[in-house]
Every structure is written in C-alpha cells, then in structure tokens.
Length: 228
Ligand code: HEM
Image (cartoon, rainbow, N blue to C red):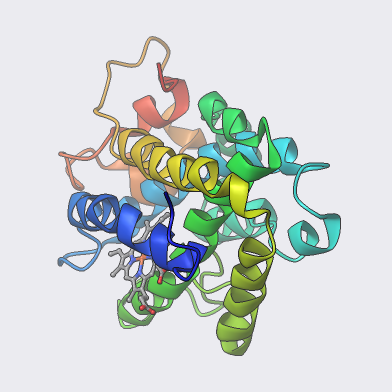
C-alpha cells in the first residue's frame, strides 16, 4: 500500500528519475557543439509532441491551468526565428501517440508533470545556448517560457498535482513514466530516407547543409517521418 505521508511529487520524482537521466543523456544538450541546426531539429520534434498533446488536453486539465501553459505558439515563434517558413511548419509531423495521455485527467496530469518539469532544466539549457554565436537576439522561448515566474508556475503545477484524489496516484505516475518513454523515442527517432524531400529553398538556412550534425535526423526525416 502507498505511504500517505509521501507526496505525489516525491513519488513522481523517484519513479521518473532514471527516465529523466536517460533522456538527458540521449539528448546530449549539455555537449558542445550545440549548433543552430541541432537546436532547430530538436525544437521541431518538440513541436510534433505539443501539436498532438495540447489540443487533447483541452477539457481534461482545468482550463485556467492549461491556458498559461500552452507552448505550441512559443515553439512556432522559436522555429520561425531560426528560419522556418510556413511550408516547413505545416509539414512537421505530429506525434499522434501523445494525445493518448489525455484519455483521463490522471493520465494527463502525469504528462503535464513531465512537460512542466522540463521548464526547470530548460532554464539551464537556455543559459548555455544564449552564449552561442548564432543565438537569436530575440531569444528562444520554449526552454524558458516563464522567466522569473518559473518557480511560481512550478509550485502551481505541484499544487494541482497534490490536489488530485490519492486514488489516482498510480495512474499519474505510470503516465509520467510513459511520457518520458515516448519523448525519448520521438525526440531521438532515427533518420529515415525521405520519400519526398522538401526542396532546399523551403528549408531553414541552417538545415540546408547536410554536413551539420549528420548523426541527427535529416531535414527530410523531420518532414516526412511519423512516430510509428
Ligand atoms: C539536458 C537536458 C536537461 C537538463 C540539464 C535537465 C535538468 C533538470 C534540472 C536541473 C531540474 C531541477 C531539479 C530540481 O530542481 O531539483 C530538472 C527537473 C525536471 N526535469 Fe529536467 N533536464 C533536462 C531535460 C529534461 C527534459 C527533456 C524533460 C522532459 C521533457 C525534463 C523533465 C524534468 C522534470 C519532470 C523535472 C522535475 C523533477 C522534480 O520533480 O523535481 N528534463 N531537470
């Protein structure tokens, strides 16, 4: 039986720690060089996750909480700043499986824990990126969406999680673990041969050169590939 004195957050943190470490290591965001093409590709993959997940959260997570946490517009803004045009954004694949986390409030809450928690590590990532020569003057918002309010927003999210019925905890935790797993496979998906590559003029400048970070998914796979 679950110990009622252990908070849901403590259980979430413990249960997801190995998956957090695995994702952190897989993304290699703290390793140099973190060039523009690599960041653009990763933000495009996060876009695919949020594009399926955020619309499915509506009506499941309380509206006031959700409204302040929608990050799809920030991702689109960041991608445009990095040179993505409308055609590129329209062609990005969605991670359809992400919507399945929203089948119940308990499950949605577990996935919310993961994506909101990423704003804590995101601050570290953004600080590192901001020293890069290509870093846009207008900044990148996805990894630091709340600025000075990061701690406040995180406390609100934790308050919401702790307000859920104790009987939901196992489902919340299982969903948080599954969210990390899906993010791992989606964000680190291997390159596939594109059937119909986007013509070069439609690609953001930094993705045109195939010599950039060849071990990451190619620009074509970003546009053509689905999760399955
Ligand atoms: C290089 C990449 C990353 C680094 C360096 C990093 C680092 C961190 C740091 C420093 C914290 C704060 C820990 C604390 O305050 O005690 C944190 C928390 C967290 N991060 Fe990451 N992170 C990274 C990537 C991610 C990603 C991609 C996700 C998920 C999308 C994620 C999910 C979380 C979660 C859920 C928490 C909250 C853990 C808790 O309950 O305290 N992180 N991370």
